[in-house]
Image 1 (cartoon, rainbow, N blue to C red):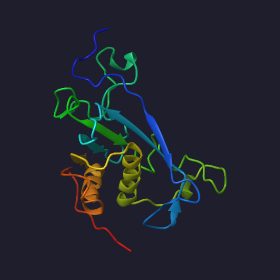
Image 2 (image 1 turned 30 degrees about the vertical axis):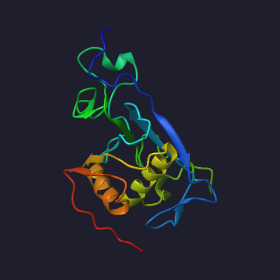
Image 3 (image 1 turned 45 degrees about the horizontal axis):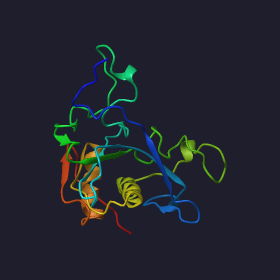
Image 4 (image 1 turned 135 degrees about the horizontal axis):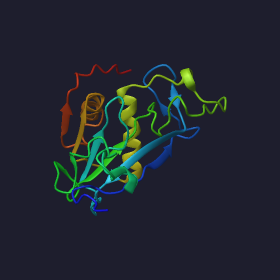
Length: 197
């Protein structure tokens, strides 16, 4: 089968776990801390030697870390292609050009696509959190992505881009970590009100 030349190709979901006791991540509301936390994420393109070509793509409310590419050959058979939600934008020669940039997309905490959320086990009970999963804010989501960047050794971002809830994350990056992204591309998102303590 001929594979699309402008695709990032076959991808895998990766996992990063941090905030293990006693170093749980502080949260903005409700529960004071959460941990351990696992983030599901995907990457596309190659990180350059000085790690200066990274872009964070943040997903909308119902999205996942699967922004581009496909998981298996079955995903690109026939008329219905099962590719990442922004496959038209991310790839070689596309708007977010993976020949130039290293692209990172992480599923948010509280999401249902592999990151710590209501289906995850509560370390205090050994059972799924369910309705007891703590309230998380956009700022909490962005802080979790910052932990992932630290793990990958990325200190600066070319840009952060996202639509809807992803756009709110892009805005929060500029407020919470103004020295990291050189720019933010915010699509279909409302202004944020951040309650700082």
